[in-house]
Length: 206
Image 1 (cartoon, rainbow, N blue to C red):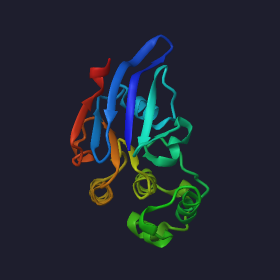
Image 2 (tube, one colour; image 1 turned 135 degrees about the horizontal axis):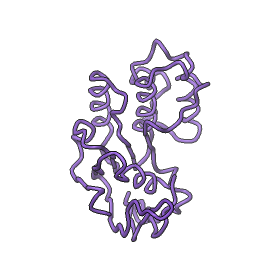
Image 3 (tube, one colour; image 1 turned 90 degrees about the horizontal axis):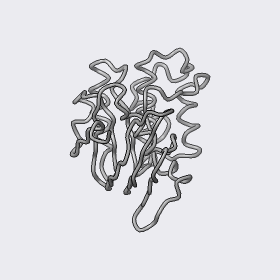
Image 4 (tube, rainbow, N blue to C red; image 1 turned 90 degrees about the vertical axis):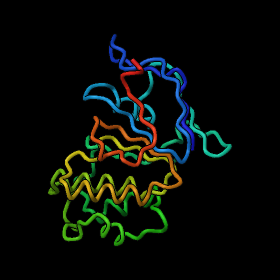
């Protein structure tokens, strides 16, 4: 998959967060967007994901030789961020089964296999509203990383994770990063993007 940013800009009121961004993200590569808090890296990632509209410019999505309509791009991507809301009334089991209805998991993974991967077996039938912030982040990451999508977007993926959780994330993403395009947004936490081969500084797009 390839994503091409064409003169992309985003502003809130009269303040430009970034502007005149021209860049291509190519398949089978792993990128990290680096920047301090408030630098615009999460905003840029959301524009790439299509969850935020750019103030100017366009985003092109291509898979193989086929161009993907912007409104259809969500089918080809999975996205994890600490600010993304989960369905708190769902259990872990229900969350996995719900996603499977519209976005399949890799290699035919079963619900039980995914629960085992999260390490949250004892809480499988507990509503997510009773999960800690670290447990919820594990759910977000597992649902995104294990989805069968050519594009994976991760915004500060180690947020709310303890040392054991960071090791879990590192192992999971390394096991499922092949043959897909991955873009990570990070505020210099190197353990979030050790697998990335290209670094981009959001401040360069000001």
